[in-house]
Length: 544
Image (tube, rainbow, N blue to C red; front, side):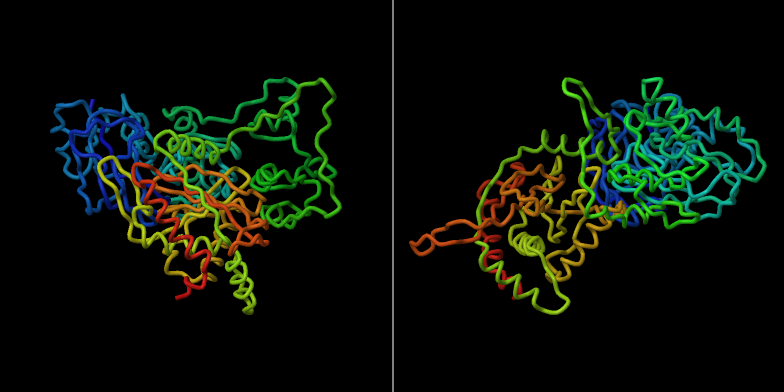
């Protein structure tokens, strides 16, 4: 049966989208997970993947054209299937078409799902009642976790009000309401997770009975975190938390501050951040109302210098382990890197650069008042300039074409408690070293506080990963697709080197370039590294 694919809502504020490029054409076979098109939203150009399998029977929006969210984008079905009935509604899918497909498929966006509910099973919705489902807040998001509710049942909600903070696979983001009314029902408690399109909340006129709407919502119950199997752990969880508790939390609960009457004064988001950072809440001074521990207290917490880190005592011969639920970010990292490693034919080029001039250059540059640049800033700037001379390395691979980017957006890998994120320095070749340094510092801070926006993580054409500050001499990285290459940067090592036939003390740095052999041949990668060597070993040339 043919499936109607509508223009998805790829950002929380998106109202219309423009098809930048179709990666499939009419007649092509589509597999679930295939990238159908690149869609330009109000924030970024994002890849839109198919949630269905079949043959691409119709394209409703041509490249360069714009249409509203939920308007007809494409139709997927069986080869040769008659879809004339689905096209009678013009630019958007008709209600009858949605009714037919509802029984057999799950459409690709939250807004499509809500329309189906309104036209089928929830056709008896009380007047003015609106079902709010888990939104897709990033292009790769498959499920979300409610970090904290900023509204409670009974509160008045205005269009644009922030309903909740939702943890996606990339960041914790604010989700605003697109409707006005009263919050009648919360379908997902703080700390619980659900797939995109699952019931999140119900908004409508005050006093409306929506118990039947919530009970009959067809997408199913939200996917809560697994309960601990031990009865003792369950009893402990029921005493200490109102929401579902993961196995790891139940088996090894973090100590938390309580008042004399046993009440916990900590916000859900602060508690979650503390668990991720391994912070003992007993030692945190709350700055919120009545001494409540809030997010800023966790972000600004610094352990006492005298506090020693003591590991958990395990008796000899006793097995012990802690189960930690995979976060949305960890799941996304696993999926993306696995796909990259097994789809892109990686190969590696290793070099060692003389860093004497770079060290002297940095020391002199930082002697300027209110100026501070790092070696990483020098590497990012050098890469940006070298990429302009070697567009093949600044490329992206698609099934039917190779894209040579004329702009340079460099992703900088940043370690965070949940794993790794890659904020992007846009037009890095046009920025000065201090500008790059300030932007990298700002983006890294946002990354660690989970405040990066989707736009700040989109559009990289090349990636730099630096582990030199951790004392790593050399390593290789997995390509951050759709980039064609990633540069791994080690630390600067003082060692004997040969100069002018004499052994002297020198400082060198090892770098490794991982390349996608589909786009970057060995000679091309080597030429890029030669250009990069010229900039890094003679950084004054970057100022010309």
